[in-house]
Image 1: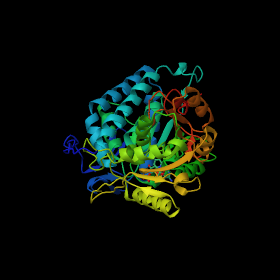
Image 2: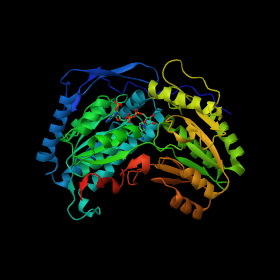
Image 3: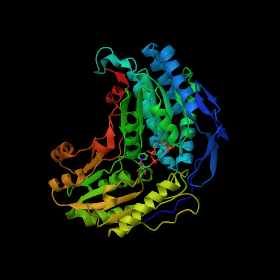
Image 4: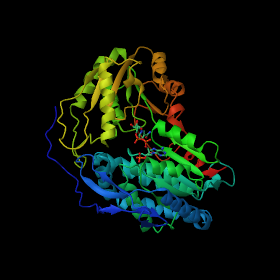
Length: 477
Ligand code: NDP
């Protein structure tokens, strides 16, 4: 049964949105040299939130030059314990301004405030805390006695976790003594710009972090810039491959965190109610805009009917709507382009013969919305079982034996994550060994911790972020 709730919206008054934003270069907000700008909108209402600068080639030059100067003159020579102090300060300021960051993230991205408040923002702070602790202990990190920073890092991030991805990129780079130029996604630039204000507040030396907003060309210009020593990218496999081609033959270091099509495998001995929560969290968290989303449910045939039935009951209780409402479970789709992609792939699922189901739910009239959707009768050959949909769409497949589960789970070009639900510890260990995925969750899903490395195999990319491993990409070892 679904309860009637009164709306409980978080106030947006806490966010002081400026009508327009410059680029954050050399420790201050500056106008772009050629003066171009674009608008960022609230995907839940289509309201324009602010105008944001479009960085062109000359701005990229300026940002990279500022980062180089800060690297040579301030950040690399600085005592590591002093670098720690800045990172601790940033972490504490993220905590202090957490409500503001959460509201802004939900406004610009469309994700429920419950998630930005309880997941994105605390994890972003935790990343800075964690890497602050490493900054003065690098010689004990297992990368040799004298690890050195790489230089200037060019970092390009996507729109699904804008603040958290900025933290994943910046915190280890800074702890290791590098300086950064960060390019947030075009549809979600605002939390990175608020982070720039936090850097000012923390008195981070000018040029240590530069934030340049813009579109794909800005990202392409940044990664190809000859002044960049290390490129870190999170986003689509297609763009990841383009970046690989663009920097081939240079001395640039590269890490790529790309797409996924994770299997969430439920055995017949699994605690079913717990597994249902894990399935829901696996694919409907953040509207399914998650590279490690458990978008392929593999359920043992003997319990498939029960699981699907219980799953549908649970989905009927999810609330879709205003991202700022604290009761909301499913927010808005981030952009019309992404909504089109989800619609198209879902239509293909139906035309290929899978059975589509969504709970009764009214979609708001304005904004970009897609109901939680489950496809049953899906086979390995279906496109919805192979391609990343990056939306609230689950494909259900079945298996009979553990060997078949492993074969089906590994039958993908990706290899980022997987989930296993079973009561048998030995089976968990066996599955973790057999599954070709960078992260395997057991009896849980979508759990993140700054101390735990994250990254993929094959078309999901290479390199690890988080943990001690996450330092390696930013150190000359
Ligand atoms: P993209 O890979 O295009 O975007 C990721 C980031 O790269 C953005 O900042 C983007 O800028 C930038 N970018 C775009 N083109 C280039 C380029 N040639 N060189 C350097 N940087 C570039 O992802 P999309 O937003 O287009 O999403 C498409 C699909 O990618 C999604 O449907 C999903 O399947 C997948 N995806 C996977 C993510 C993951 O976490 N693994 C995250 C996001 C998407 P801009 O925003 O201005 O285009």
